Length: 58
Image 1 (cartoon, rainbow, N blue to C red):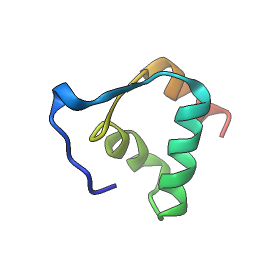
Image 2 (image 1 turned 135 degrees about the vertical axis):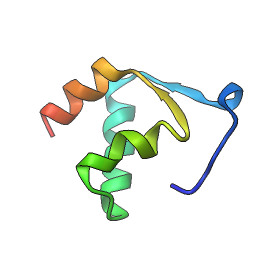
Image 3 (image 1 turned 180 degrees about the vertical axis):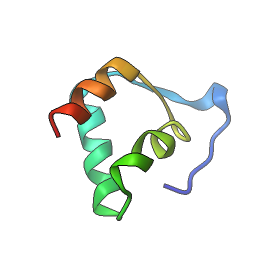
Image 4 (image 1 turned 180 degrees about the horizontal axis):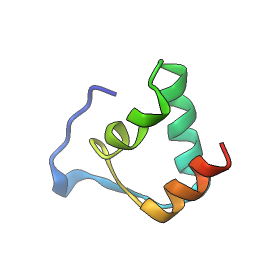
């Protein structure tokens, strides 16, 4: 995910289904689980509680 956006342009990523979709896309591109949050926060404001819940069940 090589897209960098200004903070004021970031969408909020709070829905668990959307977070799971982002995780699946990144993992299909070869990112490790440890790198997911860093990559996602380059593009989105990520709900950390929702992210942790999704990643725990992944």
